Amino acid sequence: MKKQVQRRIGIMGGTFDPIHYGHLVTAEAALGEFNLDLVLFLPSGTPPHKDARQVTDAKHRHLMTVLATLTNPHFEVSRIDIDREGVTYTIDSLRLLKAEYGEETELYFITGADVVMELMTWKDSEECLQLAEFIAASRPGFSFGAKTTLVEEWFAKHGKKLHVINVPAMAISSTDVRERVRAKKSIRYLVPETVEYYIHKNNLYI
Ligand code: ATP
Ligand code: MG
Image 1 (spheres, rainbow, N blue to C red):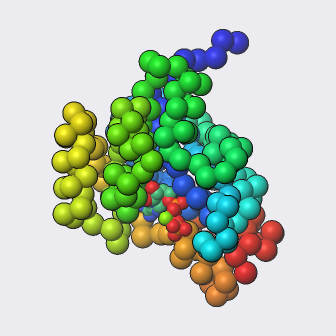
Image 2 (image 1 turned 180 degrees about the vertical axis):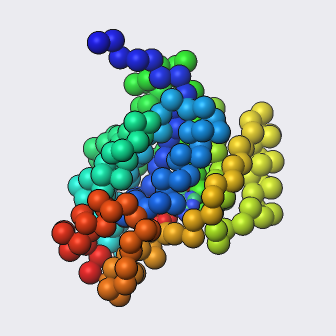
Image 3 (image 1 turned 120 degrees about the horizontal axis):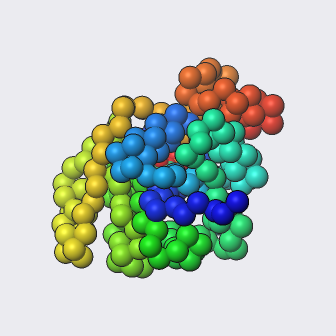
């Protein structure tokens, strides 16, 4: 069967350590608002720097992302950041995805309000703007303040627009999920059931 041509693809990058309902509801909102054909989840590779918090092995983070997205026909998981050697930059992921899906495919990079503040500091940030549209999703605890205005002005300077969307508020973070597991508190209804089982079965975050 001929592979269906994808016209508009959302990209949800993250550590996903673990993936939670905040990620999923954000991806679903972007899918609907921007009429995307697909949202690709891109779990990050395992960072090489030793001083950073020990990020869980990519094998586990990838599998949890697959489990969490299983029931949504418009969600897929890509290994491109996991399988790349060394530090992975968004610019390289965008170039690879453009090459894979073709120039005519529009890429929409989805981030939460916290990440959008850092956009201007990314490697080859100006080229990132040319390769993808950027969607900033509201996230409880992170307001779109003066810094966002700066980012919006920077987009405008390059003839681009930062798309802001409101998603049903989910005050969930992976940090909080990890801390709850360590404290033997419930993570039910914060992550999909399959992810909850996977975490406990593999003794993650204890
Ligand atoms: P950690 O606490 O380990 O940083 P996290 O919950 O922030 O984890 P990440 O994997 O760092 O999750 O985030 C991936 C992307 O998802 C980022 O763009 C982030 O802003 C966004 N995101 C994470 N949680 C939410 C949420 N509750 N609502 C909206 N966006 C979110
Ligand atoms: Mg984060």
